[in-house]
Image (cartoon, rainbow, N blue to C red; front, side, top):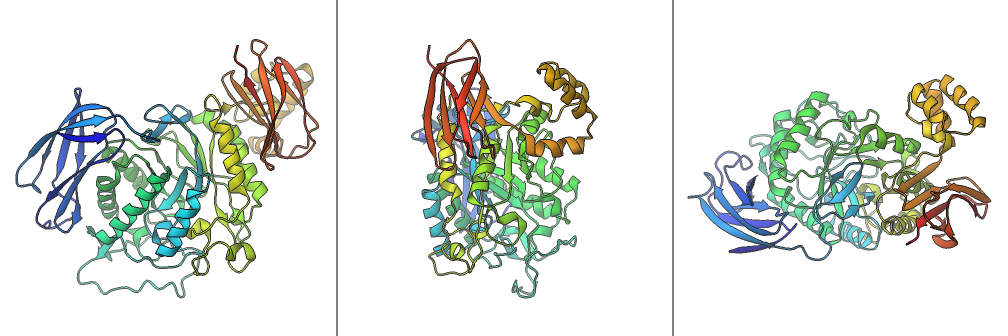
Length: 552
């Protein structure tokens, strides 16, 4: 009997001849049975006459399995004894209402970073990146399968995902003369033979994924993107599905992966919305383990209400709307791009460390999850400190290297605070902020609960256009969240308050802490309080107040 661990991929290996025709669409499958439930998985060809099936057991106990298909001389059967998980392996992260939760019930709070073309760099740069991640606060990373051509990232990878088609003249893929922001193309590309993967690429890519797992980092794997000079961004739709078939056969059993259909899907001119829906359906139907599935936008938000979509992956600067989106869609909200800490001239990459930290607190206080990036300009002291490998023009958000910014340490402080709470936060609109995303009738009903002096304000708010209303709350929003009646977090943002007024439940007793989110300090200032509570503050920005229910 074979033994395995819960939440750890089991790999069955077989020898056989080279596939005839497609090396992707091979006939190799297995069915694993446990307590009346069956899970069917497809196998893949790994090169050099080796075939593999990977299975992720999520329950302890005894499984039986049967492996069959034309790739084997005859069917094989066996049994599998799955023992409990060890260490920090909590299983795949999935949506649980508006929150994220691991398969074993552990809550997951996403503190992400971005290294788009991390897997396509030199060994020296990749080693630096892994060393940086080992000491960073991030538990999630956004990275691409395909290489990326974009400003600050124009290198060719050592290997490509597929072999060129036979009989086609080789291409050099030089970046010379190609703009740093290449125009999207609708023309389909016939250069790559997706039925014949380059196993050197997939082996090396898999190694990066496994190293992320050892660091405890979830990989939000970006399956497509428009920033391309190699032709991967405008494959035929049938070829897109063949590529996805191989990727899912090979990687779906890894518990720490998420599927991001694209980075900025709406800039991909080669794909229609119907194409994206077909891709979404294919991934959902061919993933036996139902990993998280989202699609990242540039301008047009991909509909989070779609059945297969597990969470909202949103590029926006409208961070005051996170709570509104949580309530609207009833799913986790991830702000996967909200500008980056750095000093490049491009508008998306020149936030101060304070503003990057501020974005994380704004999002997290509302029960959302935020993603970091770092973009220091090569040739400046900060940018030149971003790598020790000797390579030039290494920008973290694009290629990795060494983190240099001020925000990661502060993001780590926030993570410690959030993970110390008794459970995940939910948005708690404060005062007039409670009308965000509501109809006029809902606003009037909410206003009825406010003091008399606020009634005239409610009338005026109802008379505003939705656009004017959003513009108003973009600067007037109160960022706050709660965990039932056990915890209340108030982020004061840029307010230089000398005092905060809290309205806590009368039925419980609370301890109140004041946090300086930039200086990373936390001080208990009150104990045994309830109801209307006055908290003294130092009159400086970026403070937070946390009220925690005390044991009875």
